[in-house]
View: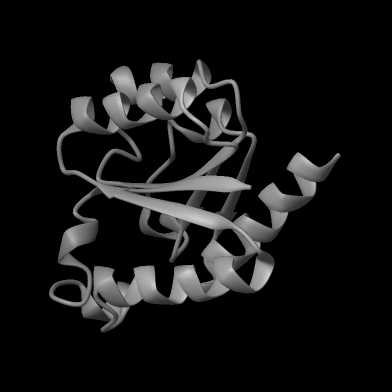
Length: 142
């Protein structure tokens, strides 16, 4: 099983800003923990991060044509942006799970990605990724 993990706009700043909301973990530390979860589940992971919406869309389209079985995406700064990313997610042949470390709704943000994702996992910190990977694994084994 091959899962694409996408980190959207601003995720490269984790551990540097908004520490009171997201904590001190940096993106490389997130990826190390996510890889640990995936390894334990027997899942192969590919990571991608960009602050440019079109690059994230291109990564999804490449995954569509590749060997990817599912996607976990933390859209970050794209969460409330109505643009091409939402349409790209809606076109995927595989399930896409939206993940957030915190609960964006508590901070007044409504996700425009949620309606086109198979499921969402919010508010469990880094554990949100573990829950998303386990959920994807269950969906893909059906």
